[in-house]
Amino acid sequence: MRSRIVYRRSIFPADTETVFRLLKSLDTLQYIARPYASFKPVDGVDGIVWNEGRTFRFRFRLFCLIPFGTHTIHVIRFAKSEIYTEESNTHVPVWNHKIELRPMANGRTAYSDEVEISAGWKTCFVLIWARLFYRHRQKKWVKMLRG
Image (cartoon, rainbow, N blue to C red; front, top):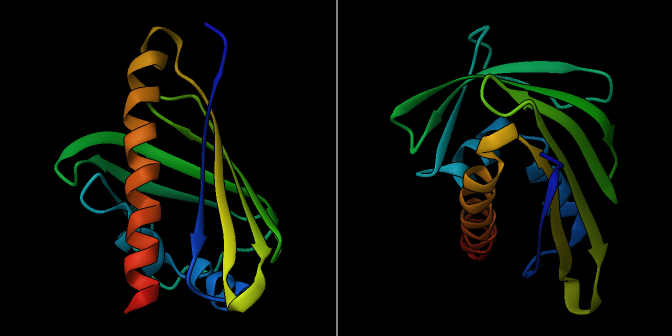
């Protein structure tokens, strides 16, 4: 089965510097993913710093309960305007994720998630979950940024 794309865009009530600073933190990923998913570092390292060329492995749980294998994130680009990771999971061999940040007027940021997914016969099910997950993530971002 061919890969599929999930795309979602939102306007965040914070400047690009603030959003990018928060993107650097594993705590942000863990917060915005709950309760759809949880990521626990395989190496037990919580102070992860995302850098280009680095690879990280996580114990991934669906809905923070169901073990769903090891999720690997290889950081290809990590810049203020664009972040690109090649990701894979025990059950989803391709999960390539691009985040774009665009400054807007009044200190806001246009934020988008674009994810390429390929999981063989499971792709259609993963795609449904991913659409819900990224909608949820962006809502959690807005909630976090509004305080």
